[in-house]
Amino acid sequence: MISGTRWRAARIPHRSDVEHSFDAARATRSQYVSTDEIQFRSDVTVELVKSSAGDADVVFAARVSTMGERSLADVDADASESGGLIRFLMRERHGSPFEHSVLTFYVQAPIFVWREHMRHRMTSYNEESGRYRVLDPVFYVPGPERKLVQIGKAGAYEFVDGTQEQYAVVTDAVRESVTTAYAQYTRMLEAGVAREVARAVLPVNIYSSAYVTMNARALMNFLSLRTKSEDSRFPSYPQREIEMVAERYEEAFASLMPITHAAFVANGRVAP
Ligand SMILES: Cc1cc2nc3c(=O)[nH]c(=O)nc-3n(C[C@H](O)[C@H](O)[C@H](O)COP(=O)(O)OP(=O)(O)OC[C@H]3O[C@@H](n4cnc5c(N)ncnc54)[C@H](O)[C@@H]3O)c2cc1C
Image (cartoon, rainbow, N blue to C red; front, top):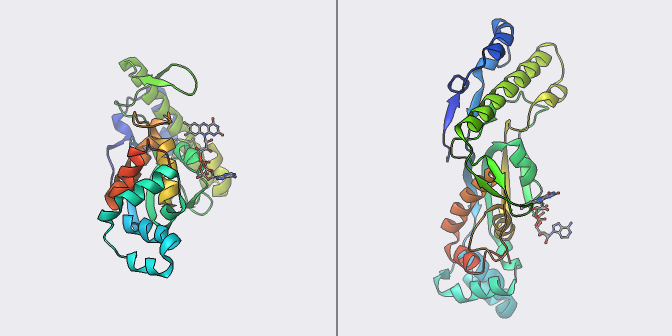
């Protein structure tokens, strides 16, 4: 499992007025999670949970084109001699042989990342339900390394470091708003309101989890759009938090399909 910094709410600067407002919520021991159990994270979790993916999968699928049934011999073949074929397929955008490799990930990320992620339709998803379970009080807060200030023009933004004061404003605002929101969520649940109604007050930085299954072609399309790289023929400027997910996907992809990954990079990160 890939995960990074986690810390408790207490490590984020306190606002005494906020604390005071929620004393009452804490005093009533709830059957639901109380606001003092709120967790803040600045990372994402990405685990490769299963895969059927390898460079040989590209080769045998492509070779049926010229060899017919004889390409079955390539199903488990060593693909190391087939770099030329894979590079040719990538360069000429013969994409379908890359669809026979499949990777499934378990991902925990904030809802605002999922909103962007789920625009990728050539992907299969199963996500935890806010109707059938009480959502855990785990929220995203930008870490100190997260660049906070946007400059440049739409479509090609650059981000630069914020000041300490800006970082303090961000952490304080996040803490205050999620504490309020989660207390109101709990309040509605305790009053017998349905989870699907109560969740309406929760902010988009709450974490959700899902299984994500992609074939290698869809994954390369995702990587081309959700990573920023100087090697790209068509540079993309993704939000940093979805890029954190994409970087973990790319590590798994490069490890399972090194020849295909190298061909993707050499081809300017253009998905076939
Ligand atoms: C930096 C960035 C900024 C963005 N900003 C916005 C924004 O402001 N507003 C917004 O709404 N979206 C925005 N998007 C989302 C973007 O428009 C795409 O919806 C998203 O990147 C998914 O890409 P996709 O369609 O290629 O992926 P997938 O849905 O996985 O599709 C993969 C490929 O399949 C084909 N395909 C899939 N469905 C169809 C279809 N219905 N018809 C024809 N071909 C299809 C296409 O070739 C497509 O490239 C942004 C994306 C990025 C990376």
